[in-house]
Image 1 (spheres, rainbow, N blue to C red):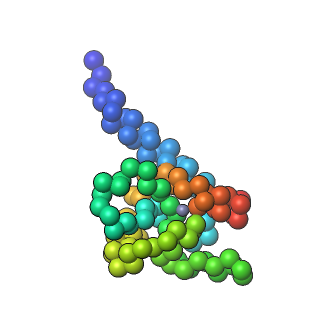
Image 2 (cartoon, rainbow, N blue to C red):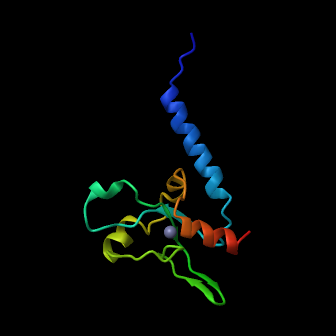
Length: 114
Ligand SMILES: [Zn+2]
């Protein structure tokens, strides 16, 4: 009998699909997937959107984003925690194993960079 581990395989499949999905976003700067850091605890974990967080500036005329900003400009309420927890690119590749699901981020990315 083959030693199958369905759950692990599922997790791998989901990650692989997320990587492909995220790769389809043609964002012209280094970026990672990140959530907003809210001041109110981890209990809020459910329903948090996964955003595109820029690790480099984008400067395309009228369209500008700074390193450390979300593509959709979601508000950063806790700048120091955000800088410490989100704006590090050491695990940027790893972060992309989770799909971006912020509709605003996706809309901007798809409209702007086809
Ligand atoms: Zn977003």
